[in-house]
Picture 1 (cartoon, rainbow, N blue to C red):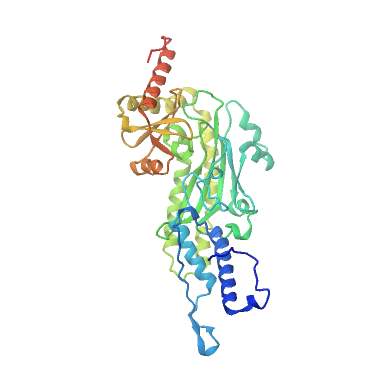
Picture 2 (picture 1 turned 180 degrees about the horizontal axis):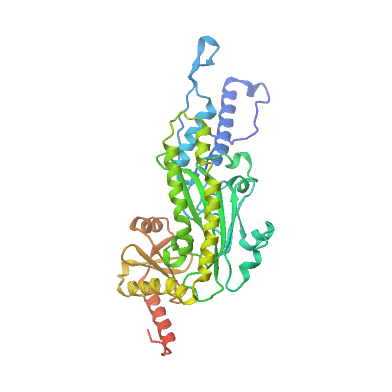
Length: 412
């Protein structure tokens, strides 16, 4: 517009009172309103184009002093609808991450837990995700079970928090009423033994959230978002296969089926259905979360009754052996490097993806389809591994095997 925007600018003198100046002032105020509403609706500003045209319409009756007609849609409702579409098109929901209302995306470091034992603790007033060590969250809640986390073997504890409590500190303009990304509630749980980790005291905590969002086709959607990282920084939702985190997977399956039923019921509502109809369908969310919490606790009690040998065989033998076999037969194009976590990823058959640390130790195995791999490459999360990195990975793995057999290290 050629001049800076001032959120509190008003026509203060006669010159500013001209029709042109008044129109410019209204335009400035409209842009300020758009900024605030975009933050509320979860629009990812960085994924929009260089310019944006928003079609607005005023339906007026000039002969009646330009009064709005019966079919007139108020300006705020028009803007709200347009920004909801933008938020849906830019996909505010990302699996394994929490939306940051202040940043307008879920791409930043604040959207994932800073440590393997941290869980989501709610939002700051400005919409920044807050994280807290799980044991501290239990202490703050005066949970008498917190001591069980430090027993040998450690017990798993689950805690339920409703969405309104997670958003209690949010300012009104920072996402409290957003439907493009709205946390309806969550279960935090810990600790889980880190898969494939040599340290028996290496643990993970998880945050399992039920999130309401809008798809790129502007359809209502519900998702169970599993958030957490392993001690090596691998996203926990990537490691949710039956061999590594079977306790979580089996506990989540009934909840995911229930969410699909809720999602279909909401989508089947007529467009003119009252808001109460949608609220009645979603009234089951607290009950579903309570079932997930109880299921995790029950699975933990069952796991404690298994022998250590059976548990170790079930969790370690098959994925580790698959990883070694797949690495031996992998072509150079199947290797990728994760800069953020300094790990090598190896693609195997049946969409298997194995993660190895730089010292050759197997970190985890999870399923990843071709489009998911390419998406992470395009977002520069992964890149094709170099020949030097592939050779170093194979050498490190061979050195581990030699050390396990007591043989001298091989020369490379």
